[in-house]
Length: 155
Image (cartoon, rainbow, N blue to C red; front, side, top):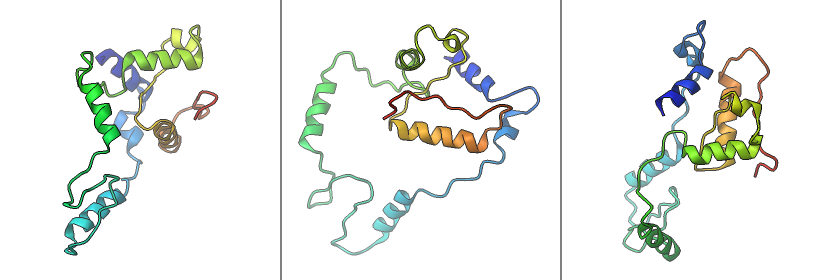
């Protein structure tokens, strides 16, 4: 794992530009609006307030209410002997990301054979990949065309 991370870092650094200088012009992101909304909700003294900011359902006692289908899915997962609840590596499950790269680029891909492919697993599908590509296009300086390869269809 450490060697894979070093390989990824090497793609973002060079002998000429230290890593810190590569990202020094990235502006600080604004505060998350959902967190601001939650803070305002907690500060509001109105007894009949409703918290609609987090996307969680609440009962009449303002306690989280879990959908029955979510409880059923949780029970299925809890009874799966193969599930160990360990965190995945930062870039995702290696078997998944490497299989996805082979699916997208082809198992005979020269880029894969030359270990020039970096893959990351995200929880929010193409939205996270879009944000990563957008971030890199704005803040990563590279001597060459700015390209991101995606599958077709992308969903």
